[in-house]
Length: 332
Image 1: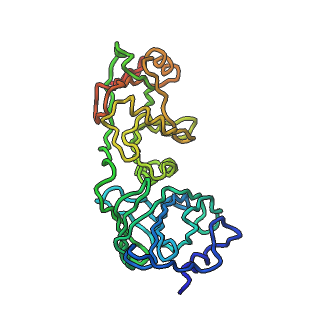
Image 2 (image 1 turned 45 degrees about the horizontal axis):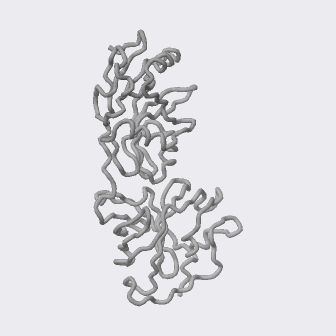
Image 3 (image 1 turned 135 degrees about the vertical axis):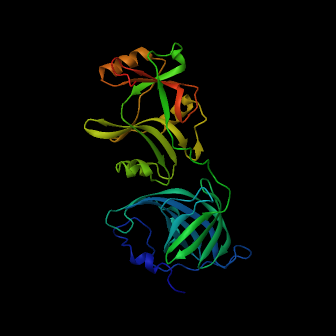
């Protein structure tokens, strides 16, 4: 039998990478009676999140004593209406089922690799041009088909119904200007009006369209890995650099939050722990109108925004968000 790991081995030096590099060709497993549709099929899979030159996910399926592998730049598709590119790569050794670690810079595939999910799968079809499987993992589950399109380029299609809510319409909720804070201020959270450029940041597959305007947001999107999100905030200049100040979360890990009250959305936003040189979570103070207005005046900000704690996210102008300008800064 031909050495199925020859290509894998030729690309790696075991003295320079922590990856498993077996010295001998893999042995073909015993045929399993009644399992799969081809002799030698195993049933283990792993998906690794790979922060290499570009973020992607590696799907590996046990087959004929090795791990058949595809690099998927945007991860598994959650919606059957959208197929994702899957680049067929060299077979990997079975030891790769548990591999995680840092592949040194300069080596093939250099970068951090973590195990995103693992489990078992069932084979419905396996040919040189089409692989149809049922994944049974903790994060990845359901029926998928990989089909070849051109050379090493394949596509992966989800055959089950959508696994997540659709993204909400990307139209921001806007405050209505008011001279004084609301009387029932305990029902509101008070935040600074930043006076920046309002920006919605959809994140999917470690990427964001907002990077077209702000290239530095690519790093923010990559930090989310496979977690999908829609952030709401403003791009402001702080300390001479543009910074994204986030103050709302419309979508989180496959679930739309627009119908949730602001207090719940705010808690979910804070749980993300967004804090870096170019992005941060805006401070928020429930029921504290006077001290927040005073701080806004002292910092030369346009005013404060009062947000009802029980209000859903309503695109367009909404009386649930009130802009109270600092003296002399009315926008009217």
